Length: 268
View 1 (cartoon, rainbow, N blue to C red):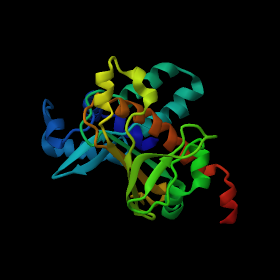
View 2 (tube, helix red, strand yellow):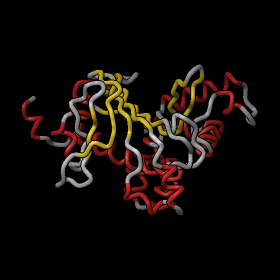
View 3 (cartoon, rainbow, N blue to C red):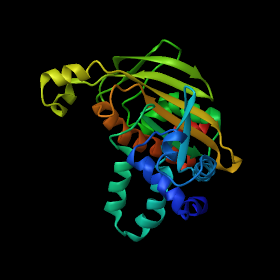
């Protein structure tokens, strides 16, 4: 947390975070606009923010897109605000705004977390049903995790797995897992004013990718980056839903791998 507080101590870096909060996903050129700083100065400030895990840069084509990473904000809230119960609801409301801001650019949702585990065990947690049923509530996903294979889900933990037309795109153990995402389901009809709007939204497809790599600082363990993109619009109802969903799921995954108990672990 020391790196986070040091990064936040500078008003220029706070301004950069404010700009990303206003519109998440910006290039260096866009971040420089309206600031009384040179491009080199902005770059250095972004490096400090990235070192504190407050900003994550993702290469998209020939550009680097910068995203506000809510994980350290969440940790500060848990460590300080949560402990002393000061303006807790305000802090969580602000975090929700950061995650669900309406002006996001593609890739639409990027989340980074660091987990004290190995690359193999992290990949296993993303694909092994014994792990998944704990932090995902028993609803999936389920697959043989071979490229082209279906990815199935349950609408109810007690029900059967259903094929929602999701496919595995990439599966590189210890490094990357990617699959297409399902469209909206009939249960989401009430989110739309008309049947026409709902029918149009049903056409939208997206994909989710998990990238695993060692953290730049070995003591931090493994760096897990989730990128959920391919949405047609920043106002996408699916985009709105996955923000909060992935945040909760990955928080549970981190807790499990860093201290939770699992029957399968006893075999290790």
